[in-house]
Image 1 (cartoon, helix red, strand yellow):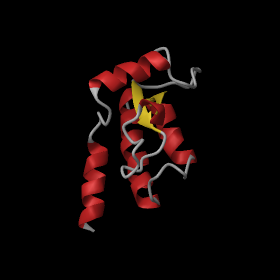
Image 2: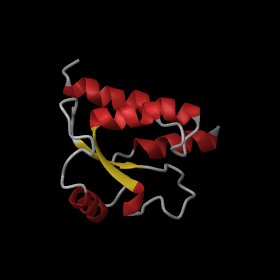
Image 3: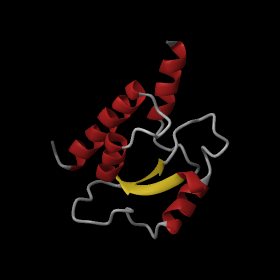
Length: 106
C-alpha cells in the first residue's frame, strides 16, 4: 500500500519532465496539441506515453506527447496500455478532469 501511495504522490507532480525537456517536447510538436481541433481545452501538457517509471525511457523526450488538458484526459480514459494499473489510471483521470473543469469554469 505504501508503494502505491508513493507512486500516486509522484503522479501529483505536474512537471515530470525537466524544463529543458519540456522545451524540446513543445518544439517537437510545434507548441500545439497533437490533436489540434476545436475540442482543445486547457494548457499544453507534456504527457508520458508510457508511465512505467522503471523504464529507462521514462524521462526520454521520445516517451512524450504534447496534449491540451482535455486530450490528456481522453488519452488516459481511452488508453489502457500506458504503464499504469487501473487504480492509478482512474486517479490520473480524476485529477486531469479537475483541471479540465477548472478551465471550463465548472
